[in-house]
Amino acid sequence: MKKFSLSAVALALLLSGCATTGDGSKSGSGTSAISSVLGAASAGGSSSSSTENKAGAALDVFKAVTVSDEELKTVSLQYRNYEDRTENAAPANNKYAQRLARLTKKHVNEDGMKLNFKVYLSKDVNANATADGSIRVYSGLMDMMNDQELLGVIGHEIGHVKLQHSLSAMRTAYMASAGRKAASAAGGVGRLADSDLGALGEKLVNSQFSQSQETAADDYGLAFMKKHKYKVQAMESAFRKIASLSGKSGGMDAMLSTHPDAGGRADRMRDLASAK
Image (cartoon, rainbow, N blue to C red):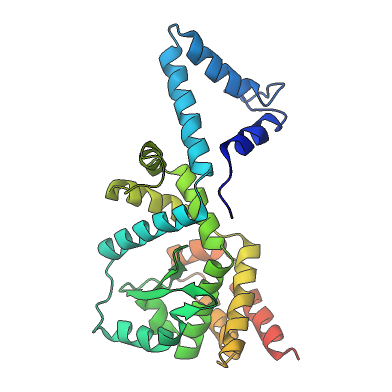
C-alpha cells in the first residue's frame, strides 16, 4: 500500500456524509465536527485550549494514517527488537533455537521476503509474525508439534506477512497508540521509547486478524507445504492438536474464540490436501 496524501484523507472525511457528536447524535455534515474544532481554535476564547488540543489530535491521526508501508515495517522492527529484549528469547545454542534454525534455514528468503525466526521460551502454544518479516514461535507450540506440523504453522505465519495481514494489524495498532505522537513530532517514524513500544504491543495484541484473513493464511500455509514438498497432511493434524486444547486453558480458549473453529479448519485442510 502506498502512502496516502493528506489531501486525500481530508477529502474522504469531507465526503463521509455525517459525523457522530459527543452526545451520540449525528450531525448533518461530515465537515461539521472538523470545522467546529478548527473554527473554535482560531476564534480563541475560554475553550480555545481544549479545541486546539482536539485539532492537534486530529492532525496526529492524519499523520498516522499517512504513514507508509515501509515506515510501518520500521515500526514493526522496532517493536520486535523491543519484544526480543523483554521476552525470554532462546539463545542460539538452545535446543529449541537449534531445532527452529534447522527447519527454517531454507526459508529466510521466502517468496520474495526476507524473514527471520526466533523462539520464545514459554509454555504458551503460540506463534506470530510482524510486518518486517519477523516470525516468533513459542516453545510450548514446539513441544506440541512434530517437525512437519510446525512447518505448517510457520507457513501459515509467513502467509500473514506475505498477504499483508501483519502490516494491516500494525497500521491499526499504530493509529491507536500514543507512540504515533512521538513519530509525528519527528516528521515521520522516529525512534520510539520502550514505553511507547510496550503500549503499541498491547494494541497489536488486541488487533486480531479476521476469520477471512486466517483462512487465507491457512491456504497460503498449505500451498507452502506443497511447494516445498512437505507433508501436506500435517496442516490437518496441527489443527487437530490445537482443537484438543479447547477448555484446558482460559488463555487458550480466548485465543481460539477469535479464530475460525480449529476443528473446521482441520477438516478444510484435509479436504484441500486430498483434492486433485
